[in-house]
Length: 211
Image (tube, rainbow, N blue to C red; front, side):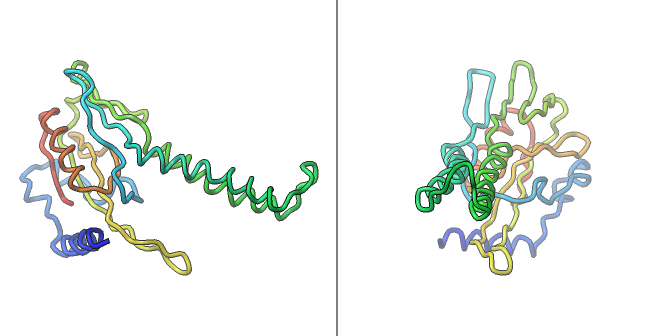
């Protein structure tokens, strides 16, 4: 709780200070966007960097990511089944109320599917072929100019729907033309910085940390 509060306050202070890309003394940094490349974030560690042989390194989803997705995907059918057990009805004559319940339960499952599609792919950096590959995107190492860390304050919702606010961190590849490829959203800045530093060393590219 206190760690989350400290991170949130730190992020707000950094926003006031405004990270200046010109401080990097790199023309590519000036044409690179410094807002999140992918809106929405996570408040837990979604990926970890692990070696896969001598010349290959990969970002793999953490068990927490798999559990999060599975919990949402499975919660829809589970809630529908529990509702049916409490309020049974002939399967050939589904009442309108149950249709609404099924639709509501389906929303939870879709959230899990969306999270899985967005976060659960393995991201590979092949040092032999000198190619990055992940989520249907490929880029040669020669096109990668830098790695970038930016942060995003995820507020607590609005109106009657309130959730706990948190700061999410995003790791991106920056290409030589200033375009970015998102690698992951992440909730643990310490671990993300460790992994990003290892990846930057593997690629032989600078790490731009604006978090």
